[in-house]
Length: 476
Image: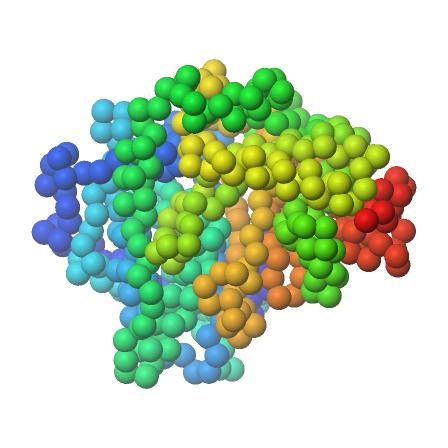
């Protein structure tokens, strides 16, 4: 939350009252269900690091605005509606005989209690309070693993904030949180009920995933793409190709940087150019990242892990949960490729990758790289790039009024991770990386080259990008 721009005001948080045991499915192991592969791995990692000198933790947060004088009762009802609507927010996890399972509090077991946190006079005080509160109040091993509150002002505006442990959410869950609370709040202010599509159940998603892939074996044909990638890459994990100044096996404090890469007009120009050569906007972004890494000293063949949403177009589109799979993507980025050839390579690489979208990354990792599976972190800095187009999320048409802003925090890392976001104002990047002098230099240089590469791609006739880039990208 170090970059959050939240005006000061009076802070109220809402806590879940202790549920009635009679309203919880704790009636023995037969009534418990196994968690998803992502949840199981995350829980094990956090648990194993708790008593070390470097305990691990992570959360995702979102803030958004409510205009006008706040109806506190309606907001409390809206937050209660959110928890009752999404079963993953009512799960308590427990590890039994090595397997992570959960019991679910029934919707009628959940009640909220408002807690007055006092007046805050500056934005700096708000940021410090939220950062400290999220780190202390969000615990993978405790329930509930999330925090909810609001900064209320006499000026007639309110900033609502919610932060979740990764075990119950992902990046695409944040827009759904905003839409659900905003729509419910407006309905309760009118004296009505929220009218929203069915969210689907993350617990059912986890059960289906377990049923399909719990028994998969190392020689299963469904792992063919992974095995072929491993042969070419010499391992499951594609290395981040630039020097970050890290030592093997060590975790570091983090730097959390955000920047705007393109404004909306420039981003639209890049998207149009991608479509002209048969590509999609995110393919232009991936191509630019690959070119920028090459220009900074990386290889002429791009390899990275790419997280992908598993929500599909059904009811899970409206759900909360960790609907993310991760797959390797690779394509050529040689200097002799023009823009159209570069995008064609990205498109072909993405198409091939998507044929294995259903195979859970956690299972592929466990089966094909067991020597690294029990470690506290990936074995070395990994090239990992994520992209979300917020304009396609439920409720996106209201984002200019709601002003949602998402945040990511992790306690320690051994490399670099970048999340790219397209919204109505442009294309943005949020990078978390190791806090070393070399990493600061490396990431600053990469950011500069990436921004110029994207601008050359978007407006090739106007801009002359970094040395070696324009010669390739000007040619369509």
